[in-house]
Structures are given as C-alpha cells and as structure tokens.
Image (cartoon, rainbow, N blue to C red; front, side, top):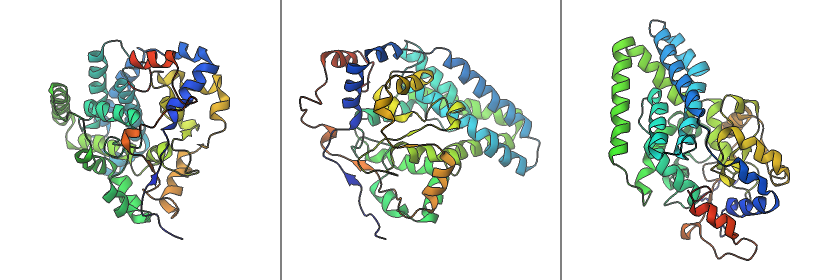
Length: 342
C-alpha cells in the first residue's frame, strides 16, 4: 500500500455553482425554498436550556456520570448547536444580520469557546473558495496532513483535539479580519456565561460542557461528519458528500451537504426538499448512510488519510465554458446574497 504524500490537485471549477445553475434551469421551483426560518431560534433556546439544566444536574454526580452524560447526551446537543451556529452564519433565521449574529452567539454559549462570529467569516470563505488552501479553513494544514496522514493513532489524536488543529489553520488564511467588536462581544458573552455556570453549579458543570464540546466534534461517531463532508472516501472526482442517515433527525439535516453547498440560502428544514425535487442530481452521487460506520472506517482504513482532499489554485476560478457560465437569474441571485457567493 502506497501512502499519499499530497492532496488531490484539481484544475476544475468547484462543482456546486454549475449544479446550482443546472437545477435552477430544470427545476425553477427550487427558488421557492430560499428564505429564512425564524423558528430556528426556538431550537437554539431549547438546546441552550437543555445544556444548562444538564450541567446543573451532573454537577453533584460522580465523574463517570459527568463524562457519560457528555458523551451520550451533551455531544448531541452541542453538535446541534453547531448546526444552529451554521444557520446563523448563513443568516437563515432573520433578515437582520445583527439578529442572526446575536443568535449565533447565544447558541455558542454552552460550548465554552467563543467561535460563532469567527466561524461565520471562515465558513463563508469555504463556500466561496472551496479547495483554495489560503482561503478554505476546512482544509487541513500541509504539516497537519503530513503529521497525521493515515496512522490510526494519529487519527485518534486528530479527532480528539480537532478544535485545536482548527485553531492552527488560522495563520495561513488570508483576507479575514481576525478581531472586531463582534468578536469581542462573542468573547465577553462567553466569559460571562462560563463564570455564571461556575458560580451556580461548580467546576463539574464546566467539565461537562467542555467534554460535550470536544465529543461533539471529535472522538465520537458525530465527529465523522467532518470526514463525510469533503474527504474523498469513495471517488476522487467527487469532493462533497452527503449523509442520509437517521441522525439527521437530531442534527437538523446537516448531512444534506451537497444540497447545502448548492443552495446555501435554503434553511435546514427544507434541505431534503431539494433532493426530493431534483433527485436525478443527487441520487447519482456517492453518499453516506452511517456516521458510525464512517467513524470506524476512517480510524482503521489505512487507505484514507488527511491528504484525501481536493485543492485548487487561482482562488478556484477557471475560464467558464458556455455550459458552466451562470445564467442571468443566477447572477442576480448571487449578487442579492441568496446563493453560494454570500
């Protein structure tokens, strides 16, 4: 078995803009799905409340209950909160950008680490410049891929400390303002919340919240989501994959990742309708049915490494052919902030 020593380099345009155009041309009714879902805010309130209550309940329990509750319950709540932050990053709750950002900061509170505002900026770049190493925070660092590669122990460490590895990616990213009043507000809100939880419930409650956070994105079947989305687990010609398993019910349809990249201005509750409306465009793509299966496959399969990602140069721009050139309706939609260039 030969180990990969580099990412998969592509000279092609990222696939989503072309597919968006094709679907809109064949199924113009998909435009009706674009919009906001203000009721998502109530999901944020419920999830934040759930984490606060559970932190209080485990604060007087033994350590095995603290970590057990974090793995079996808190991880799912925090993962859902990540999806809520993601919805806020795309401004899919309210018309006001400020209201969406404040909602994201609220969803971020039980996660201890202030990241909602920064995530919005890095994530929008990921959509606009998918695969461009200097702009796409979702890509691992070159030293990160070389260090972890396809080793079992390396993958375990990588998943366990996934948020830490993400922090190290910031230094390579360009064109993103790292600090402003919104980031400051995010930090101040998080510090006040953490201090309040410590004062009300004590250190075990904080440990519960920290463990929930790390399990929700790391060494847990839920952590397979980060592998599912863009790692080349089936085909090096397909760089985005969806997940259609049962956990979408508690993860607010975040598995519909091809659909989301094609139409990032459609809220979570309507993502399945994209596939239902245009099945020919998605049924032909590779997809995943189990995060748990993918989680163990990633850990043990030496054929999958951190190098299994598509990268491209020149900010992802290529000369458009007649087939890939956006139509005027799509250009207008993009300029108005409703499509992938938002």
